[in-house]
Length: 233
Image 1 (cartoon, helix red, strand yellow):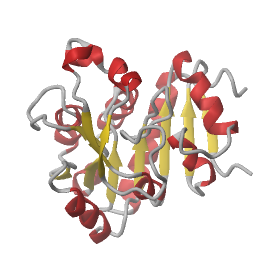
Image 2 (cartoon, one colour):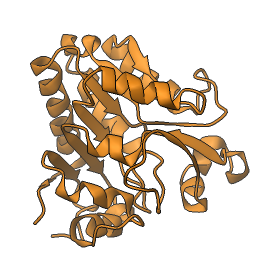
Image 3 (cartoon, helix red, strand yellow):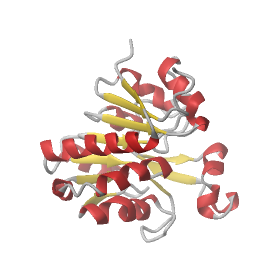
Image 4 (cartoon, helix red, strand yellow):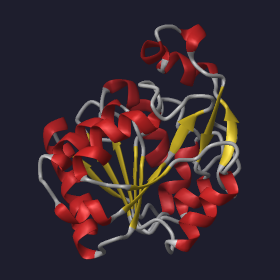
């Protein structure tokens, strides 16, 4: 039996709902650890969140879910840069942790020192990846380096000005760490996400759909617009 809560509404309303949920956790547990994914969908959430001017957000410890390998934090294409522009700098968040290949163990240790992730804010790829956990990633994985699939690289080609410029590798928070988050919000917009959302909700738990591990999470909320939800209505 699915444990997740599913909410379907317009993109604006979904973004506002997600922002309110983040704000509630920041207020209820000042200084807690939160995990944030970069992306076109989550940007809408962060825009709504920063417009709320929640002062407690500045106290939270922000863990960037994943990062391309070989990019500096100041590279405008990096997840760290985009999250800083869209959320961290606007909310006054200064305790920021970003994974890289050299500090994977330290990154996991820092999460543990915080008592784990209070809330993870995620998007989902059309192949079911969360963070950069691609299909066939073991469920018991911690922070690790991953070879990006062609599908993931194609989805990010525009950001890098062409497929040939997309890095081959990335570093990501592992599936086990994400699953151990006390609360999870997963946001998906657009008809291109409809099939993978159907697999997430109704498919068998499988390493070939990494997000499917969240089916039984006890505090998982799936937030969708009508297009992303068209195959589960």
